[in-house]
Image (cartoon, rainbow, N blue to C red; front, top):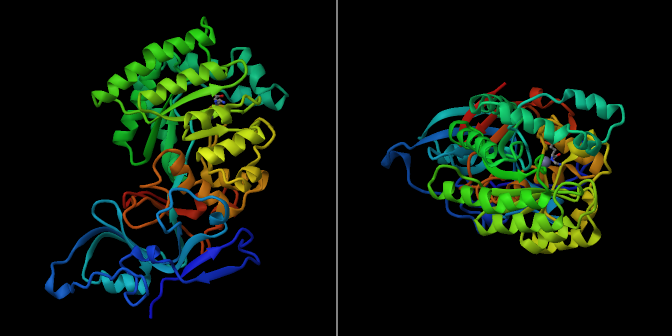
Length: 479
Ligand SMILES: N=CN[C@@H](CCC(=O)O)C(=O)O
Ligand SMILES: [Zn+2]
């Protein structure tokens, strides 16, 4: 009898000496049509024979993978607490993506072979000895900008702080000047290049912020560039309006907030109504010397009222009570949180507001690490992002996961969940992305290793490990 074998890899179940529990799968994991119909609770596979029906055409067959990492298998929208001890992993499994780009079946290789024996596939990939994982989700990036800030890296190495550089006209302000001068085409070409680097590092869904324009005209230019990328490129995009990323020269924070709530947000709403520009999230840099709690509240509330999800920068360099505010406003996610309070953590857990942790920032700026363990223990939905921007120049979610494990003491299953299903939740997309389940989008990566943990363990080796990146069942990167 061909049972689906659902493996659970525990917190300490790394490649060396970890324990792997084999469990009978829950019925929902057997949604895969390859499931054995004799399995209690299994949905009966379709019984129509190939002889009496026309051959069906599908987009992709991934055959006989050593491991297929589902991440979760019961339609969970996020994973917290003990759910993170064991991710759902199938061994010796195959996966089918249908012509619509959605996952059609996942199950034991032999069952999938029987079930689909007469069908055709645009592409078949032999995954023997390899692992299939969900495409990675990067929940926080600033990828649209012009200019060059490598000199600031040297200044920071010599001891300057982020805020010293910012207040001296560098940092965000410097990038704003360059981005205002850049053409839309120039910004699009550099964004395309950056997104292609992310894709080849395994990211298939990425949050992209504006925020280097600050004035309406340049913010719209950045958002149009993101919209064009969403329409033309293979990577999935969640667009964030971040016009409150810094206080523009010549304005106070209150004046900037007025401009945003009276002019920027209504204009975005109108463009959305006309189908010209889709924005998913509203962001504010809530920080001492940038936007205080009151200004942040005003902007986020109006953003929410115009239909945007709240997803903002908080409690990064100073404790601001941003987490408490986000929980109160119903924020979907808050990023950074190096300085979050205990009360803020508790409030985020209750409000199901995701903490988007950014290991590259704490690493590059030598900040104290966000308290990931406390957040995880209290049941906060922890996600990860690369924070790609001119200050933290990193495209790679595998490296982000590695840093999260070493510097924030997350386990490998926690890090992978944070870079897949939980990051998708932070973007409001975990019903379609973030795990390999029937009916979800066929976004996957194939790595040339017999255990998935190598993607995290081999620091900086993702380009050797990642063989294929697939979105909607189509190979979009091949090593
Ligand atoms: N903290 C605010 N924003 C960015 C940095 C942007 C920049 O320095 O250009 C961040 O998330 O790290
Ligand atoms: Zn950021």
